[in-house]
Image 1 (tube, rainbow, N blue to C red):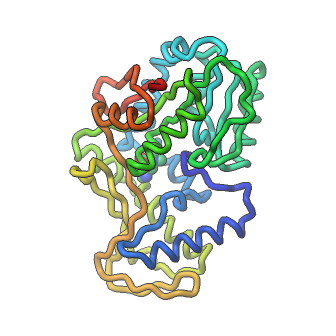
Image 2 (cartoon, rainbow, N blue to C red):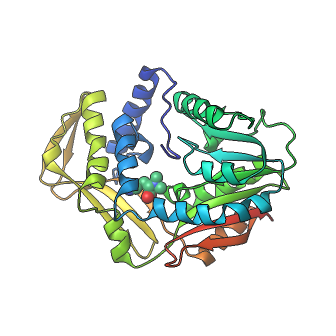
Length: 320
Ligand code: AVI
C-alpha cells in the first residue's frame, strides 16, 4: 500500500460513487485523465507490491538499502524520545528499519484505510510490545493536526517510496508545508525521492519485461468494468509509459489501440485510435530541484543520503 491508500473502511457504496464521479468527469474532460488513487483497489495494491519486487523497479530495494545503512544516523538526528509520524503508512515495512534503530516515545502511522491501519498496528504491537503506537486514520493530504500525539520532544516525519513523485509540483510543495505544520518548529521529515537518471533506466522501470506495470495500469479498466458496469475490451487498450525529459517525469496512460466506443456507468465514450488517457505522473528530482522544493515547503535539506549509483535519495528536511 502507498500514499494513495484506499478508503477501505468507508462503505463500499461511497467508494464506488466517488470512483463513478471521478471516472465520468475524467473521461468527459479533454485531455482525458483518471486520478492515480483509483489504481489501488485490492488487485491494484497486490500488483504494486509485485512491481516493488521487479528487477527493473530499482526504487524500493535501493531506498531500503539506504535506510538500512543510515538508520542509526537518522536515529541520532531524531534524538531520544522522539515521535515517528509516517505519512501513508500502509504496512509500515520500511518504518521497521527506523523502529529498530530509534529510541522512540511513539510511532504514529497515518493512513486513510482503517483496515490497513488496524492490521499494521496489531502486527507492530506484537513485534514492538514496549513501543506506544497511535494510528491516525486520516488523509494526510488534508490533515490539520495530530491530536493523539501529545508531548514527545520532537516529531520526525517519514514519507518514503518516492510517493511525493506522484504529486504535481504544487501539490508536493503543499504537502511539505502541511508536514512542516504538523511536525512543528523542532520537527523534521525523512523523505524518499527517486532521482533523475538515464532515461532508458527510467523507461525500463515503468515498462518491465514481465508486464506487471502494464497489468497495473490496465487493472483500472477491469475495475471500471467491474464497479461501473463499463465495457472496456482489455485487448483494445495498452499501457503507455514514457519519460518526459522536459518535465522530469514519467507519464503513464492507457492508450486506445483502435477507434472504439465504450460504455461507462450508463454513458457512452468514443476513443480515437491512438488516444491516450492519463493515469499517473511520477516526478523525478535532482538534488538542486529538491532543495528548491524543500525551501518552498518551509524546510531545509540538512542531510542527503544516496546509493553509490545515485539512483535514489533519502533526505532529512528540517524546519527552515
Ligand atoms: C507509488 N509510486 C511511488 C509508484 C511510482 O514509481 O511512481 C507508482 C508506480 N506506478 C507504476 N509503477 C510504479
